[in-house]
Image: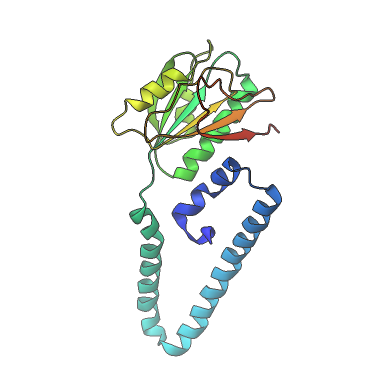
Length: 219
């Protein structure tokens, strides 16, 4: 049913990957939901047209139709009004261990997050220190903000994000994982580690690991 919920369906693939959902199960529900969405709404539209032409005079049908469209828009917006879009920070690891291919995959995944959110995200490029910090709304803005090539440390990015007002609710860190993580994230910040590259490893946690781990297989 997430297919019919504009806010929820945005995060379904990310959550499915974070919890290591079996891809066959995911594909079944994804295809089933897609067919139900496409065929179901088509049949509803056809039924409304056929039924409406018999019940409502053609002269008044347009007025009722506009009321129906307005109601659909309001219902579709309700999830976003009840659960506002979360503030998300996206960090791309630009250290020397990230190959051009790794960076390309990281930017592709960052673009997917941007499109899923449907709003601006806070973009950071970071190696052993944070370079750019920018509110972006397009992939090109992320590309223009890249810089680095030095060592790897995840600590500075967490420190910068933790000092933001208001602080993002979610931090998506795209990296090959070859660097030290902080002891713990700032309170209230949910972390998603997106590991890219054939040699990607988990970050070096000085204490208990935190956040969700998602591995991206290279094409």
